[in-house]
Image (cartoon, rainbow, N blue to C red; front, top):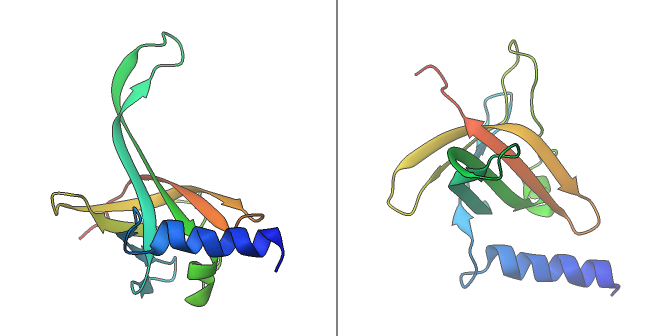
Length: 130
């Protein structure tokens, strides 16, 4: 077993084991197909940013998911990416925060690390019109 294979196996433990920071998420592909179980991510959703012009802390929202590429592939999916056309459906993710409140977000950018086998999804608030 080479180091990359070992690293990906360790990634499974770090990201998806009961003792990890895993969080259940729902992923909806651009065709409208919803994928749920078992799908876990490391979720970051923070409300403070550093203004690059002033260096001051400002209110804002940055949400990201880190998810294993092999977990997405096991569902028969490709790597999610942002959709720039307003005429096409984006990849959409939903999750509940620590208080149980639901959040719906679209993928604005997918940043895969094909060496380790993880993709970081950069998210923005989304309304599906319902």
